Length: 79
Image (tube, rainbow, N blue to C red; front, side, top):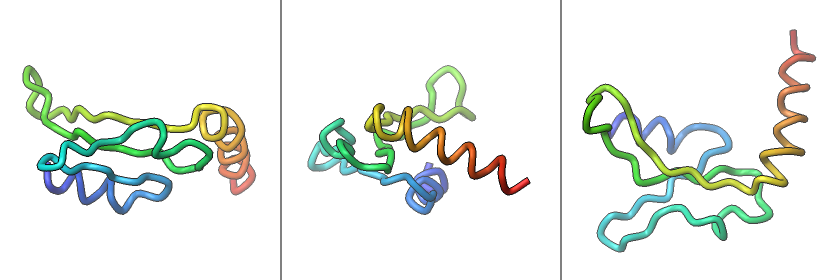
């Protein structure tokens, strides 16, 4: 789990928000008007121990529609 959290924390466009002591996890307000996607509540899946469960929040108008289309186009233009 720690390695998964480290990967998420370093991933471009991802903000890891996870504080189990303070009960602080991603909320839609954390990413409203932002390009980043917030991730948190990471844990192992109970029936499948090699699987990861996590909570994601993103601004669906900004990231889900507009920015996502641009990022896909940029990737296609590279090739």
